[in-house]
Amino acid sequence: MNWTCEETELRLSDYLDGILTATEKHEFDAHVNACERCTPFVSSVTHALSSLRSLPQIETPPRFVYNILDKTLGPRETITGWAAIRAWFRGFNPQRLAYGGVSFCAMFLVFASFTGFNWKKPRIADLSPANVYRGADRQAHLVYARGTKFVSDLRVVYEIQSRLQRSEELPGTPDSTTPQPSPDKNPGSTDGSAPASPKQQNRANDLASHFVVLAAACPSCWEGRTR
Amino acid sequence: MEQDVQLVQQCLQGDGSAWEELVRRHNRRIFNICYRFTGNRTEAEDLSQDVFLRVYRTLASYRAIHGGFATWMTSVTRNLLIDHYRRTKRDRATDSLDDAMPVVENKESTARRPDEQALLGELSSQVQSALTKLSPELREAVILRDLQQLEYGEIQRVLAVPEGTVKSRINRGRIELARILQQMGVRPS
Image (cartoon, rainbow over all chains, first blue to last red; front, side, top):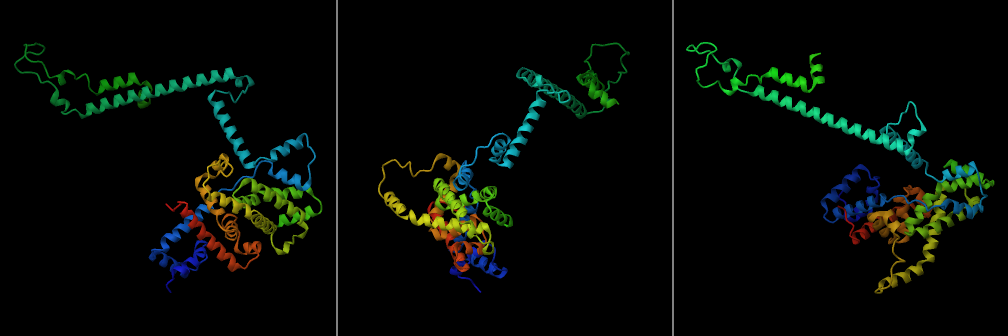
């Protein structure tokens, strides 16, 4: 059975409430997908319904409950002491109150830890503004110094790594670059001829020298490697 | 639901704290129904207070066998809202005549308060505005079904009309709401 536009409109709420049978739903979808009029129509009603259902719950005005109680039960007796405090707390939303309390505690813990509050030996004096300021200042400087040292170490390691990489990438083997003694010359004598190539002269910049630099620059890394 | 019935019994025996508990359990729901129907906080507050006053006075007439206390309270609310609608119909007619005239005076009285505006947000404000443009029969059906999530049977008891009428009103209300929103320029993205 093919549905008409009128049938689709009549059963739209059943479709939106999900109470159509599987066959009816199939027929409904088939018509809506094929009908130029019903496609935007169903879409607009679906959108209106979702907008309507997303409307928030409105909070009641302050003292709303007390006004009702005053009008029905009459003005209440003035309560004092603990009863007054309990009544005051009853006006709060317990979930929100708990959330606020937990947030405050978490914030206090973070703040106190940052200012160097000693949890093992807590003292009221540690919470005085001057001590809090001093603690925060000290912690800030410590964090800054540690950060600077960390960045500096990283830079040294990076530099050493790049140097090692560069020397590994150099072409030729040590044998091919080793100067060979000339058969025409006496060992140790110079004849004023052209010196060896710069690469041959800079043989000091080999792997061993890099490791010396590494050991000097970053003793902790070096110890870690040799252990 | 059973707790409500128990509280009603205690209340009828003169237990003030039971009544206080009933008020605390239902005040937000009743206020929201009134607000969504009228679209005005002050009117909603006054009407909600009237609802609780009437419920307090007629509590003895509540019979648990006829349905839940919440449904009964919703019926009382609905009756008061319809009474209020009829009472203020003439005022609204005058207002709409005034609206039709070219207005140069200060429109502050009809404008929403800034806190209300912030509270609702633009879309919510438009939906609320569209809702108040529905006829009262369609509006109450849509509010009970889509905002209060009542079952068809409960709505039938509240409105005291057959289930077919309830379904038809809800369907027409939703379609009409979509049409009004489209006229206001609110379209599905």
